[in-house]
Image (cartoon, rainbow, N blue to C red; front, top):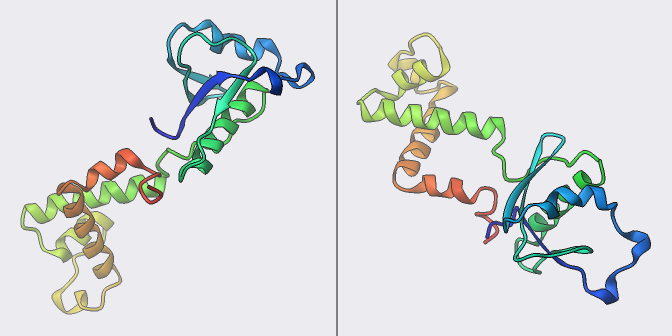
Length: 173
């Protein structure tokens, strides 16, 4: 199960303190669903939940002490913030706009290279610049950037795209 999915369980009786319990109304929408897996939306932020079986209040969150603990804790904190009426905060599993744009450029660069376009031609198309002469290309600022994008595109084509399924967890496991 992805670490961004919050697993709910029943709070052990010896840990339950009624004075610290969340308002029942904040959890009613979660408990009303009969499905084990659900998506709850708080202020536009989606939080994915897993609730094995029929669990009643008081609820707890299951957080394994593993290499992804910080991501699991951040997801649980987003749930808690949303359930208490606060801003849930950013979802760590979402690609940033910069990363998404880089991946788009890499795939466009790959398409160009597969169509036998030269690196200067690819740079001209990707970055909307004037055509770059062979002489200027040697020291042009876009030369290295274009090469990295083409390499990333080929890497994705050879199976590297699967790493996107594990974003942002791939470096931690």
